Image 1 (cartoon, rainbow, N blue to C red):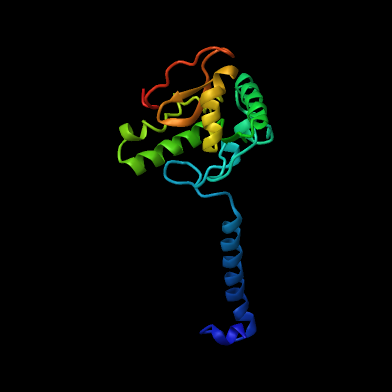
Image 2: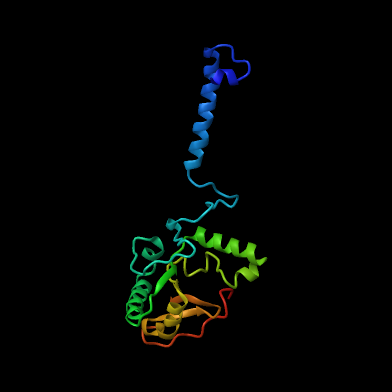
Length: 193
């Protein structure tokens, strides 16, 4: 019995408060396990959610998946161009997928913070990740396309839809940078400038 395992437990009535305390502690501990994600010192949730526009690593979305904020919050003109390109790519035997679309400011900041930690400096991180204030993902005006054969297809055919590769070091990142059928501008070297 519980009373026999707890020192100083004289009778069953005196064991009840101790038992209640143990049960209460278990309830609190289990409640904490199912509560909202804890936040770091920076105030960000431990992991971004789909509400932030996060698409899990290794996953992708169809451009027609308007139930996901990463797609639903894209600029309507960009989304229409991506969907049209995806239809034509599919007809050519290429499956175009969205690996990143709209992102919340908090999610963009988290990506930048992670890049600084990984690459050792803000300057180096900025070559690959823009700030929330400058990121076209935050305004819904940028989309990352995968897999590699799909990104290559958009590099070669994207101008037919107004889609252009924005950064030379990111073959997957596209924005509406010309009119459909126009000529894409030369990509920037990277996201730092």
